Image (cartoon, rainbow, N blue to C red; front, top):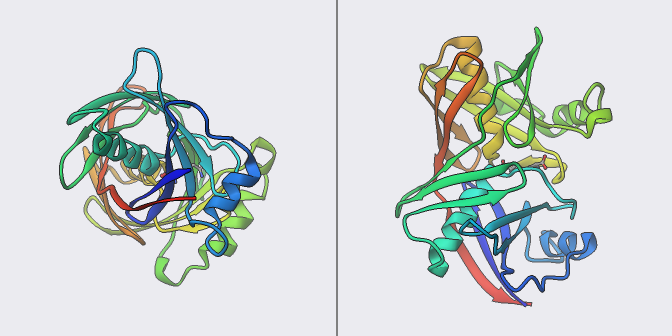
Length: 254
Ligand SMILES: N[C@@H](CCC[C@H](N)C(=O)O)C(=O)O
């Protein structure tokens, strides 16, 4: 079986061209391929499949082998993969679990349009929203020294989230005007990852609603830099773009 490895700001993925739909989907096989000691190693696995009316379909699995909700960095990597294969030119429309996505490709970055967000649950200590995947957003003062694994896991497996299927957990430090640092504990990886695209999207929208950051937010994550652009509407947000690098690392056969 031929596979490819891609990464976007260190969020890394095993990618399979599954246009003939022969990949033998099983939770164990996917978890084995994503295992960092016994497999290729990745935060998730994606299948690129044909889809009527679209350039392709994105099917995303977390590294534990469970089918994930939307993965923003995965989407950007799959667009780069489709471009590398010659399936698309410099722009595309594809379908994923949360609906239709447009994207644009340049040599430096892939810019992915995210779903509109019209509902942010606000509490005193955190915001919670769905940006394609569920995200908890909490502001902290010393992000560098935070135990993201322990604190993220406690939120992910705590109430009210665990009985709703769990959540991804983002910790945010404000470092300037329209600038955030973010670290994320990812559901389905069950660990901190180097970046989370739907996660930084949630952080940018939260920073708009709490701090008034407008139109764009630059976000430093463990694996690099991402930019979120967005438009505030009467009820929420539209024209949300996740922008950053997405590159092939290597390819091989299993
Ligand atoms: N890394 C992703 C988010 C992946 C989805 C998530 N782990 C879940 O199923 O909850 C991203 O870049 O958005």
